Length: 190
Image 1 (tube, rainbow, N blue to C red):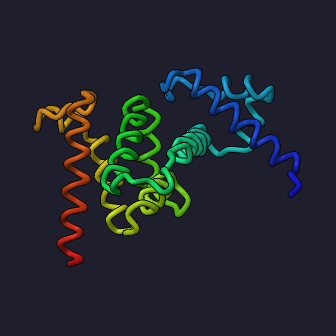
Image 2: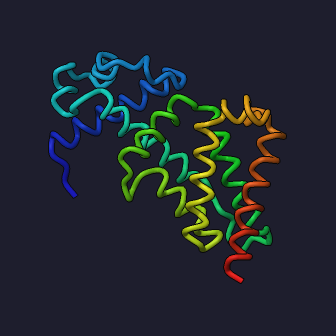
C-alpha cells in the first residue's frame, strides 16, 4: 500500500496531536493547534487544511488512544478462570484507565454517543468482551453499564455513596455488575 504526501502529513499531524495529548497529562483542552503544528513541524495553516477543526483532530486521536488501550487488553487462552472473572478483569482494567484519564475518556465517550461508528472504541471493547462470553447483547450491556457508571461517577458518589476511585468499592461494584448481568442473562436463556 502506498501513501500519498497528504496521507503522510495527516498521519504526522495525528501522531503529533497524540503526543501533545500525552504531554498535557490528560488535559486535552490545553492542547492547541499551534502545539500540534509545532510538534509536527508543519504550519498551523497546514494542520487546519487537513482537519476541519481542532475538535475533529482531537476526536480522531482520542479514538486511536482508546483503541490502543483496548487492544492491549489480553484474554488468557486455555484459561481455567471463569468467564465472569475474565470479564470482571477486563472491565476493571478499562475502568482504571477511564479513571486515570477522565478528560480524555469523557470527550471520547461523548463523541461516540453522538456519532457512533462500527469501528469505534466502544464497539471494539464490546467485541473484546464478547470473545469471553459469546453473547453480543450481554457484552453490550456490560460495556454500556461500565461507560455510564464512569460518566455518572459523581452522581453515583453523591446519591449512592459509591466512590469508583476507591479500589475496593470499584471492585465490589464491578463484580456485582458482572454477576448480576450474567446471572440475569443465564435465567433469560434458560
